[in-house]
Length: 239
Figure 1 (tube, helix red, strand yellow):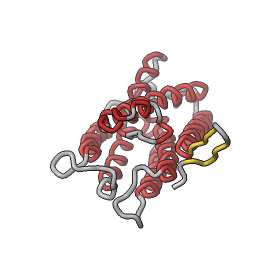
Figure 2 (spheres, rainbow, N blue to C red):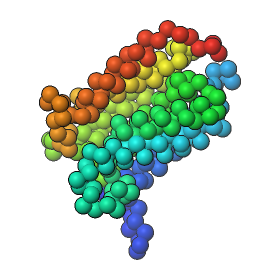
Figure 3 (spheres, rainbow, N blue to C red):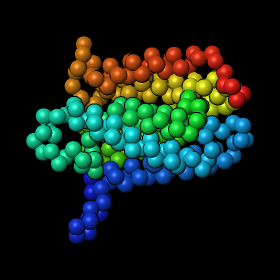
Figure 4 (spheres, rainbow, N blue to C red):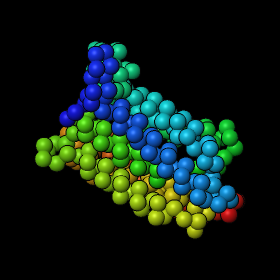
């Protein structure tokens, strides 16, 4: 583990925070680049607005992820209240972040009169890539650890997310994008399956219901939501 990359006097550079920044920069830069190559009619969101969209989604994601972490580990947080804001120490629950990011994204889309599902379809592969980079931060920070010392879960999830990114980019074609929400549904299904099985290796989770962790229960619900979106038959009005 290398939770601290650099420490110069009062200035401390945390590996977790660095990877979050790298994830944001990589995802937003790539999304802008790809969007600029699309014909204007196929753009759900213009390239000049992508960084704003990603920024709001990041803020919403961080708030949601931290809120769920604090709710789940309140007894620990209550003993050190200042830890509520110390996200550089880790302590972000992805599913809380996903919900927070979705809410923020929907609000942004509505404020700018964009089709939210089409925007998610356009951006989700790059957010998946950013998520994978962020998992490297988890490895360096020592969180999200495995039950088995010889099999770290963080690089396994990072590799799984990289594969999911490749699949979503392959599917990100006009024939599929004419059905808003279908690609986003594919992400929900793919990540739900990945996370469900990785939870069996996680050493920082406990059984919550019928021998399953809370994240596995959420994964089941996420899988069902993804299937519903994938089966949407309503084509985009812009197609």
